[in-house]
Length: 448
Ligand code: GLC
Image (cartoon, rainbow, N blue to C red):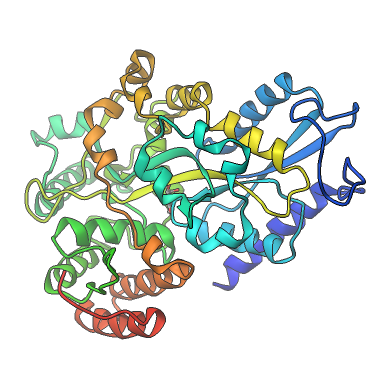
């Protein structure tokens, strides 16, 4: 955890350094009511907007392209794209430092689907700038997720769901079908790993995923648990359900992958670590988000054209579950240019940008009609084939536990991590987790 705070601190220093000079000077002197027209910078004065951006995969590159397009259309406005740490809790730590200081040094924030409730007090209501019209046509469930006490705190930007990536060439070589259950995945991963090592690749592993003690593990482990019929940790009605036999069994099963079909180091993997092994051609299967699809097919990838995606396995066939992920664009309450910032957020979440990102970066649109767009489907056919996976994804318990979701999640992922690293059995770990969750939330326990 120390390392996380160090990363956050360094990132914050970078933000402040990037702001430099008299970055706090406003364009208006009227005590805070900004009367400049969005888009022209008002009276020829330059406005600088900073967007705090993700840096996983090609997100940062894509945001710089979006910023350039926006600046071409809005000559009075300069947009600076600021990279933030990959792990979401490091990023949240950086955001909270700015918010708690009521700093105007960030205008638009890329926020996780789990954060609207936790960050509500720091974000403006986008409805005050025409948000309701902007989000018409976006998936209603995501708009609802981003609406807290009637306020639209984030415009949906891209959505995510966990997928199983598999090597089509290797399944063919070993005469295997894509696995539909975790047991089938274990068997196929073992066969391919043994075969590839016997053929000379000692670095080859069966299955890579996200096992570090961080939010990504909450996502992976929720998929295991939900796919085994073990509920979703805390249900939408506030019942704490994690301590049940199905959840215990599947998490113990996952612990058995560490060091057998998955590298021992998987317990410190994030998304990009898994993608690194996968894209070097050293894994048969990978759990990851859709962004890895276009990168896996890029020119510098060893496995371009040699893989496909499917729903994740379940405890039994057809019981697959994918965690709902995804990102929104929010505007800070402490921004000195909320109107222009909202305009930037709406532009970046608008249809043409969503289409560009879907085609170039396989980032899933939140605008439903784009799932029928021929160019989008040609670039990422799985958007159409796996449409149900995206629309039926399992939500983490962020709404019901707001504003304390990140504490709840960290109890969960640390508990699962202790099982993966062999310091506890899931029986003991989840009994203790249940008590901690009761303490943390004040909710009751029950069966899923
Ligand atoms: C992806 C998801 C996000 C999730 C994160 C975990 O970025 O979109 O919702 O919290 O992964 O690492």
